[in-house]
Length: 600
Image (cartoon, rainbow, N blue to C red; front, side, top):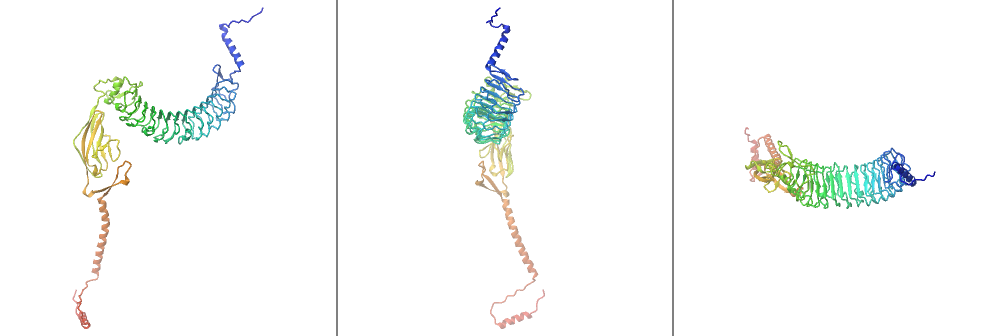
C-alpha cells in the first residue's frame, strides 16, 4: 500500500509539537543557538545571561542578537575584541560584576551599540581610547565604580553620547579636557564625588548640556562663573550639599535655566543676587534649607516664574509683595514650616494661583487667612488641607470645617497700646536707656519706634539702638543727641496705635564731653565714629604735670630755709659810698675792731 503524505493541517493535539519542530528547523537553518545557562527570546533577539555566576562571556551567542544582559555575574576583565562577533548588538548590560580592567579595543566591532551599562563594578580609571569605535553610543552608565580620575580625552570619539552617568564614584579630579568631544551630551550626573571645587573647565566643553545633576557634594561655596559656556543648560539640580551656605552673586552667570533645584543644603536666605538674571526660570525649589524669610520685592526679575517650593524649611515670615511681578505664578508650596499666616498681599494676584500647600504649619485663625477660606473651592491643596491651630480648648481644625460667615473665626482685633501716659526717662550719658511699649491685638502687633530724627527703628535693625521682642526700645550707652521725643507705633492688619515717650540724656558739669566727627573712620553703614574725651582726663593730665612742679618749688624753699638756719646770724653794715682819704678809712676800721661785741 502506498501511503501518501497528508497535506492537511495538523490536528489541534499535534499543533504545539509541529510549531516547536518548525522553530527548531528555523533556528538551525538560521544559525541561532542559545548559550547554555542563558535564556533567549527569539523574536525580540534578546539573550539573558544575568545572575548565572559567569566568569566569562558565553560562547555561541547568536550573532544577530540586539540585547545582551550579562549583569550580576563575576566577570573581571573585558578582553580585546571579545564582542567583535556581535556586530548587531544595540544594548549591552555589564553592570554589577567585578570588572576592574577594560582592555583597549574590548568593544571593537560594536558599531550599532547605543546603550552600554558598566555600573556597579570595580573600575578605578578609564584608559584613553577604551570607548573608541562606538559612533552610535548614546547612553553610558559608569556609576557606582571606584573611579578616582578622568584623564584628558577619556570619552573621545563618542560624538553621539547624550546621557553620561558617573554618579557614586569617589572622583577627586576631572581633567580639563576629559569631556572634550562630547558635543551632543544632553544629561550628566555627578554624585558622591570628593571634589574640592567644581570641575568648571571640564564642564565648559559640554556646550549642548541640558540637564546637570550634582548630588551629595561637600562644597561650602558655589563660586562665581562655575557654569560658564553652558548656555543650553535648562535644568540644574544641586541636591544634598550639607555644607553649602553661599552662592556668590555671579555663580550662575551665563545660564538660561528653566528649572533650578537647590535642595537639602544650608542656605539661610534665598540667593536673590545669584538667581536675579534667570529671566526664563519657571520652577524654583529651595526645599529643606534653613531659610526663615522670603523678602518683599526681591523676585521681581523672575517674571516667568510659575512654581516656588520651599517645604521643610524654617520659614516664619513671607513679607508683603514677596511674589510681586510674577504674573504667571500658579503654585506655592511652603508646607512643613513655621508660618503662622500667609497674607493675600504677598502675591501679585491671587486670581492666578491654582495650587497652595500650607499644611504642617502652625497657622493662626485670623482675618489674614480669610482670603483662603473665600477661595478654598478654587484652590487645589493636593489633598493636604491646611490646619488652623485654634485655641487649646477647641483643638486643631481643618480649613474645610470653617465657614467664612463664622463670627468668632478669621477676625482680627486692632492694635492697642495699654498705657499711653507720657513716659519720661532720664539717664546719664553712657548709660543704657530703655523705653517700654506694651501692646495687645489679634494678630499680635508689630512694634516699631520713630526717633527724634524721624528714623524708623524696628526689630530688623541692628546696632546701638534695637527693638526687643516685647516692644522695648533699648539704647546702649546713650548720647546727648539721643535726647528728644520717641513715638512707639503698634500695627497689625486690623489697625495701628501709637504713644509718645521722652528721653533726656543728662550730662553732669564735671563730665562734659568733647565730641568730634572723624570722617576718615566712617564705618560701612555710613555712620560717623564718635570720640569722647572727658574733661576729667584733661584734669588728670594737668595734675600729673603740676604736682611735680609744685613739689620741686617746695623742696627748693625748704633747702634755702635750712641753709640759712645753719650759718647763724649775719650782721650787715652799710659802708658809706662817700670818698674818704686812706687815713680816715683806716681809722674807722681800727675803731670797729676795738669796739666790744654785744651779747647774743
